[in-house]
Length: 164
Image 1 (cartoon, rainbow, N blue to C red):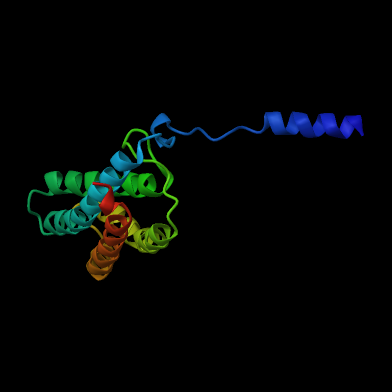
Image 2 (cartoon, rainbow, N blue to C red; image 1 turned 90 degrees about the vertical axis):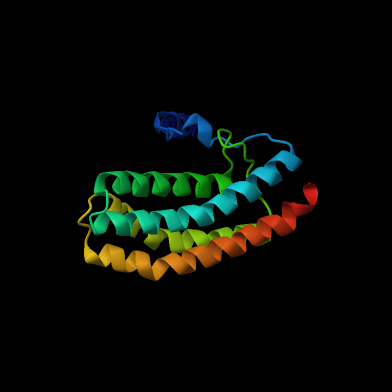
């Protein structure tokens, strides 16, 4: 029995833990500041969803493709990082872990859309001659992402709006 316990302990200690960036740890921010920050950043997500589509389309038609590809990638990365931080907290962004069920439900809907939209944007960001399928997907998903992000912002405002 002792032998099995020791083997289990060795196996547990030998299992590598995932490396988590320092900024990924949840913040310990006062509720008022956290609420204001989440309202602001969730609102910025709406703008980023539109910036990605605009930049990908401009790059695809040859309008300053280098700059627009960089803008597409930057907007994609910022949207992705912020989306994760809004749910899981992020000390670098000044956000605590979100626990409000209605907000989490809206966030889940955004994340489901983001899986497809984010992949299409990432594909388009790799080159100015992005596959037509990626641009078509961006066009199809852009408005649903914007609408769902708007609903999510509304939930943040309902929950945190009275905090100042």
